[in-house]
Image 1 (cartoon, rainbow, N blue to C red):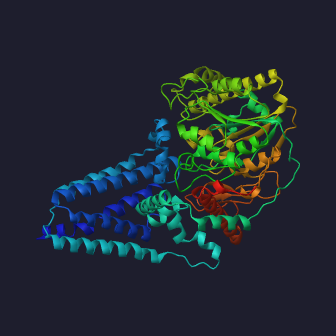
Image 2 (image 1 turned 60 degrees about the vertical axis):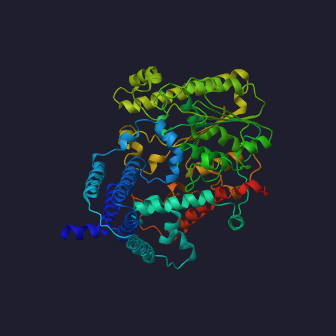
Image 3 (image 1 turned 180 degrees about the horizontal axis):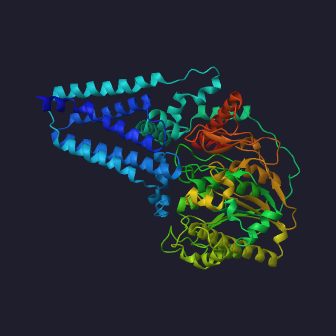
Length: 619
């Protein structure tokens, strides 16, 4: 009798599996363990899926429930793995990054902890119980009644939890900080998992992605964008840097994973010289959004925000129109504009994406005739080869030219798999004999980058055009493939500081410059308007997320999440670290800045979703 009764209530008991799995995710991530809303949401989601099993016969029920629990386990496990690697939770739209993620083989293993085996121990226990479970036999009418009853109970329970949301705000602008807004937009994956649970996050994420792919251009949303820009007009500000480099050639270089400590007087003398003699931005930060490298490319080349909610920008929005990109503005001024990369063009969909960004031609490793190592993802192509082959093409092009080069040599991993760096490794080891091997491999890759730069500049000098060429070098992100503890054994300046860990180099150099160190806070949003002003391009700063660094306007650096940002006064973090750099910071100031960041990022998401510039009539 007892066994029969238990089997009748298994539909109510099994959802606790969702509750426990969700709790493990939050516990492993160091988030608030006891969250009544997350517990309730997880239980009712589990109840909903368990209830649907009643429509099946005994064998079908067991197979269905086993599949449900396998999938839910994989979601929980993969979120923990991802969080441990990126300190954030993923969105399902990042499945478009799977090729790029798998290319860097072996990196995910570094994020695995033995404690994650608890997910699978729990799964084995549950499947064992399901196999032995006795399923009561009901007639068809009774089955439908049971299903309707349980499903209705699950749906009512789930939506009842939403009534506990804290949405009453004194100021209308605070709508961006409410639970309801977080639930609808998932503007912070970390906060959403902590408050609502990992399965509610997954549910909302999938629904939001489906809506994005199915929706068409909405005139109401376009009008909202226009109203926003009308309210936030910006005028061009002339400053001492306006037109400084007008009509000069420009070489824009994305230096893969370049950290400030990666510039060394002996190991990277060319970069060191450029840093000392050029304009060096000491407080330049690179956030890590959904796809750090390609997002950095997008921000720097367009001044817009990358996709945060709708998938990889390079895949989902490569069909969009970007008439105000740097490439298009330079071409409008009579420049040739081409891009170069020493990896395959299908990586991050760059063939199509760079065309959308306005480049006349994208030269990948195939077009440049650069040999890509067979163990791709371990032993990247050399940057020296990129500069060698690209310079042959650049010197034959019409002038002035805008050449955009994307390096790859300094990409993770930093170990013995990097066969092509063996000679450089031995060289660096003699200079830094006591450093960790990963540090040495990293700097060995930096030497490869530097050697390529030296060769390129030498060829420009031989052609007599070096003095008419401006080099702009920026890091796309810090060397996240190396554990921060290893970085901090070498880079003592940022030790223990997770925020300054994301500080990367930005330097502008041309021969015969007077060296400057710029201390203003800046990020990747600021590169576009700064360069547009220095080359006197026809741009409208209203449509830039950030500001010209040399303007009087203050900048806000967003750390890859709408819930973490910094300005010249403080770092504000509503995520896992939860720190403020200024004691007794003015709460009204924080609220005003926070609202601005969230509203602006969300509006720039709409620009992508609506392909706003496709019918753009402005200047």
